[in-house]
Length: 114
Length: 115
Image (cartoon, rainbow over all chains, first blue to last red):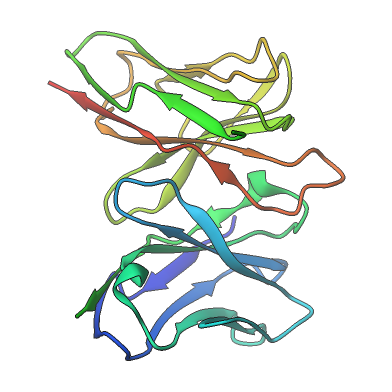
């Protein structure tokens, strides 16, 4: 089955700096890669996703890049703000139409220092 | 206000007791899921149901049971057979088959502590 590894487990950055979280996956058939953000005490929410037919996707201050050859994808947050502090989870699935096959990474606790 | 409601938010139980966590959704989603979240381990799938009266084991189903008698409801029972039940439990749903984009819609979770 799929195995997703996520690094780092914790990340602290100064407000205004960039943050990068990386994930690797094992199943070359995986073709959908979402990122979820979970603020303290709140539900995880999808913030951005990418499908295997594109290499990069951007939404304001967040972007995701995908390298299918190397089987890794990354979340980039620019101009970080205190409200970006949260746990971020990556995930992968071999079927973009099937949430039940999602395999999650172990999470990254991002802290943005004022 | 559409969404997924989990209750209770916090629950304490003594060893040897079964406990049932509630999950209700008004999103008209067919598929529902239960995940367990432990520190440093991400989200692990316990059970999922794609349709009423049908459900499937996930990766860590041992010691858990579910039912799906109504589309809106997917309760999870943590039985006394679950060796390490203290955890944060998340319920989720997804769009119906054919419109499923892969996105999960989560509840706010239930934190179970076994004393």
